[in-house]
Amino acid sequence: MYVLVTGGIGYIGSHIVLELMKLDIKVIIIDNLSNSSIKVLDRIIIISNKIPLFFNIDINDENKLDWLFLNYKISTVIHLAGFKSVGDSVKNPINYYHNNIGGTITLLTVMKKYNVYDIIFSSSATVYGVTKLMPISEKCALNPINPYGKTKLYIENLLLDIFKSNIQWNVIILRYFNPVGAHKSGLIGDNPSLIPNNLMPYITQVAVKKLEKLFIYGKDYNTKDGTGIRDYIHVVDLAVGHVKALFYMQNKHICEIFNLGTGIGYSVLELVKTFEAVSGVKINFTFVDRRAGDLDIIYADSSLAREKLEFHPQFNLDDMCTDSWIFQKNNPDGYL
Ligand code: NAD
Ligand code: UDP
Image (cartoon, rainbow, N blue to C red):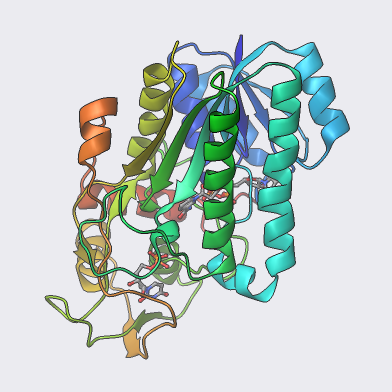
């Protein structure tokens, strides 16, 4: 039996694949490479010394998915494939609704046809939208404020509905906070194709002089130093969280939701200072206006994942900055 990882060539998926292969779990990756490079597959092979099955399949392509499920015995799907840029989703909502929701419907249709009912879905803290209640628990109100977050919430609701319709489904929804860091080999990491939207890859690109300086969005938030606070989590801890979820769901028929964060918030300035300390590189920055839609503080109540999944992140902010830096330094131009 195989675990199918959709979007397994991407940033988070590739780290999950490695954690699964470390435990000798048989993996199939599908990815249409719309936001990733096939070179990641070579690097997965170098790091693991194993060759996962890979197929260039779009989750919207029902015929190819049908072929896959007919020919391989799949026990569980870890579903990451989708578009993830908040800004892009505001400009191109149809693409987001089509790819994220449409693709998931096609995937679930084929899963059902082949009696594959176990799914772990990559959701996001973005589903919470605007809230002042910190830390955020899974029970907080959901009110995403951009099309990307809305597609995640639609899919969550779809999964809740299919579970209600047929108790054979076995669903875990993971709401990620802010994944950063990279594999300790320095071979795989976050590699945005355009100018990064997220803080950490922006900082690392300033550090290798691909970008001139960091623009810090807002210095008058109601926080200790005036800059925004987020819950950064090392991508390898996040990947391990999926393995824990996979073990937890075995032989169950559940539909459960977990935050995956560390439960600790760091400000933009703390991240910059930590990065400078571990890398020895000065990060030029300037303060600019707040970014539309940003909240002052977001961090997870991660107690549910701690208790039920035994999820205990191992890496601290130093590790996150060090590993992001090593990846960027080794790959200043990405996977060229
Ligand atoms: P990523 O873009 O690096 O990986 C996603 C992968 O999916 C890419 O390799 C892309 O080529 C592939 N893909 C996209 N559409 C596809 C399709 N129709 N068919 C097949 N493959 C397709 O992104 P990531 O950071 O690894 O994120 C993975 C998942 O986690 C996404 O669903 C994202 O929304 C979610 N998530 C990410 C973050 C984050 O900050 N990175 C935070 C919360 C949630
Ligand atoms: N941020 C910033 N400059 C950037 C990118 C992000 O100051 O170029 C800030 C942003 O305002 C937020 C934090 O860094 O306070 C994390 O932003 P990111 O986009 O990485 O995550 P998200 O806001 O989606 O949680």
